[in-house]
Image 1 (tube, rainbow, N blue to C red):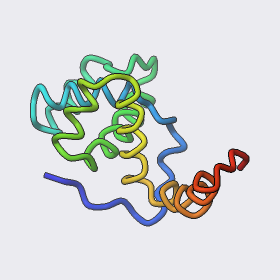
Image 2: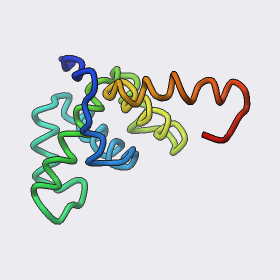
Image 3: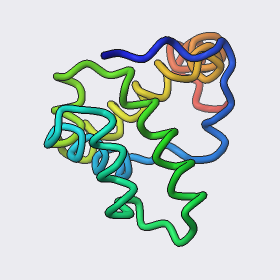
Image 4: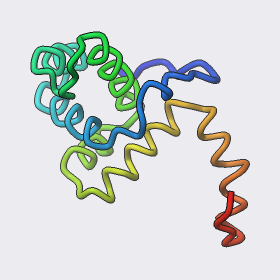
Length: 121
């Protein structure tokens, strides 16, 4: 049921920020159905992300779904039901899993800075 890993450097993240609330909404819809196709149809039919244009809704749904498909069932459950801090962490985890470019940047540029308590990037 898991999607194949994204290409090495997919740039779909440029269409959307972290999208914590959207991720929580979509995770809730998915957990209710247990099926990605049904969740997609429901999210689009209900305009779950409150987009004015159908093209924006489709693009946003696709990006959020691809991110969430990288998470485990337990992670999806925690995202849907967790507090805002947990949701942000899990949304970021989904971004790291989906977009290798962002994960690589965090590992090579940000990790050493955080390890040395250097807050300037």
